[in-house]
Image 1 (tube, rainbow, N blue to C red):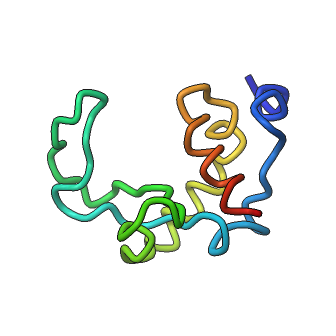
Image 2 (image 1 turned 180 degrees about the vertical axis):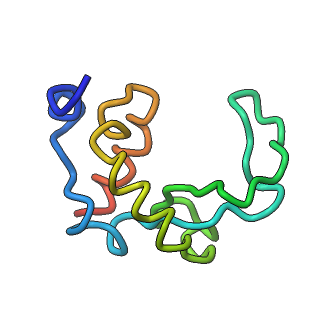
Length: 97
């Protein structure tokens, strides 16, 4: 997929420029992770989430450990190119304005 898909979905979002401003990588609190049907997933200490100010209280969740932020940074191009992440990238773009 790569960057071409990210461009198709609205252009590449630079992780280091916008992390902490338009989006954050946070630790997902117990009971807040759900699957596509809304079922609560079991706890996983390695689970992290991408949140934006549009996510309400989630914007104030604890910042993820540095290793998880680095993992998100490393995967950022793949995340942006994933069609299933388009809604999140659109949230981030709205937060960039």
